[in-house]
Length: 240
Image (cartoon, rainbow, N blue to C red; front, side, top):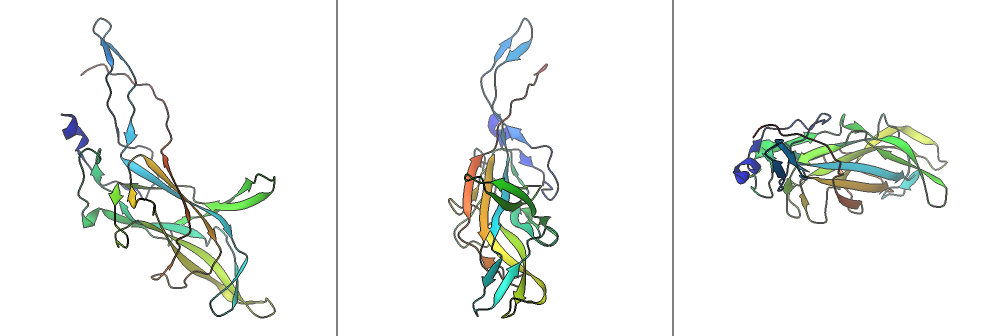
């Protein structure tokens, strides 16, 4: 039956690696010509997974901490990176039709160390000026999940940005230190939906936490939730 197909459990996906293939499903009425044994029609397919990416739209050059000390940033790709936490690597083909109960063993992390490097690229603004943005080459993927506010199983990103303290004459003091920021994913409706793309944009304008296990929460990121991009492909069915 259609429901049994949509309820087929997917094996654990290794979303820590580049994904080239995705489980997809869809249904529609198509026309079968018994004489030529051909089928004509269009069937829209939807991915079982969701896609997540982060873009840093700017990093302040100098900021002050709570004690009035000045710090300067150094957003270089060898140090600035991002990781995903509480992703889901198991699901049914279509959880909207046949819900899947998430088990503790279905969660996975892509730790920020080493994580994925945030590489720079240039953006041309409306006034013809340019800005430097940072993003990761490979997006993150996860199967569907939903959570409540304050739920420890909610997915999130950890961003690492290096900062160096300055003295009163703006001379560097010591080495650059990694600062940690925690960015929630989709605070709009608190869920990851299949075949949706979650694009997060963030400007780093404050000092983070120097303690990896206690990252500084960020609540003013911009969230854009989109339907995952569409593409047309031809396929043939020769047998039932």
